[in-house]
Image (tube, rainbow, N blue to C red):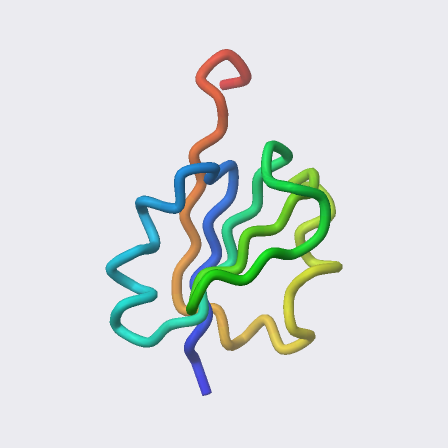
Length: 76
């Protein structure tokens, strides 16, 4: 079942809120979140480096319907 939204460098979770309200499971990865996973409804905040993102996601990455990325502009 394709129902996962992935949002990288996402501290605020603002991007995924409409998706979460629509029933998607949303993973927001940001190093500023508390280490590990914190679940708030359909939003899962992951405190980790984005380079480690796949260690936090379900194994079937085919279930990811969309991915967003908001890297710090100083790193572009």
